[in-house]
Length: 321
Image (cartoon, rainbow, N blue to C red; front, side, top):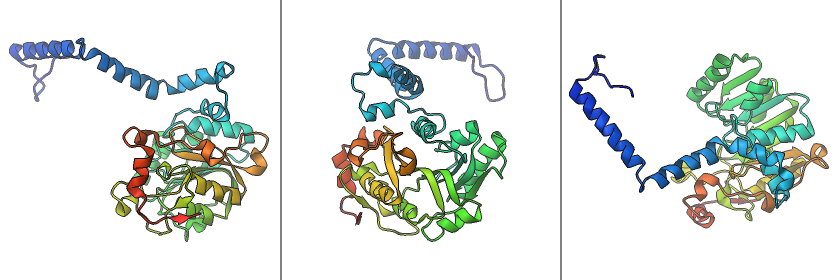
């Protein structure tokens, strides 16, 4: 046990040392008492299974998939989830999809990355050497992302460009072209918590092999809606809950179909949908309907039912798609 010291670094008096020891033992007895032990064990089990061991759990299920009782396509896809740098299990799903359709260019564009430490292209850039373009609207966040990729990981700024810019329908194609991104790229990831539908609809200077789109699970699996376009959209200014933003899964799937993409599935956290160009994915990947692929938002569903979430925002303006 480490014995505390005073602020000037000198050891505490014998009396204080004894008091610290007594309190530590008392806290230990309380923590492991018959009353609290189940709670402690449950908390440890949650973090071990839900957070720390999820990759191992999915790896085991993937290896022994033939032993699963229900081998529907949603279950077959979920076992590929892995988290290395992504928010949830997106890293593993991306590796699975690109293993099936190939990635000849090893290039990406991702915007809405915050500080870049937890985003969809991070694993591909850091561990697989992909190059591309990161964009976020916050200058301080971009500075942190530059330090993370260019400083900590030593990736050349010419190989992975990181720039501060607020994405709109009006500027998105020029931003891509001005940074050397045109034609076929391997991945486009869109997560701006706002007018995502309208921005993807406007993009025409790149042809991604795979598109990752955040969908707003609050809007449910049956509705085909999005928020109206507004260049300066801010979800918390629009509603204090922060739940009024983005696009429903059904609406974004309609847009994807129009652009020539199939819905290859969603991550089980209810955050992202994955769309693969139809000419690449047909015959290699399962195609989902929005109803089959939909998951509720995992963090939110713990405190609010799906219907309660919708009740919070249903009186606000939406555009039917």
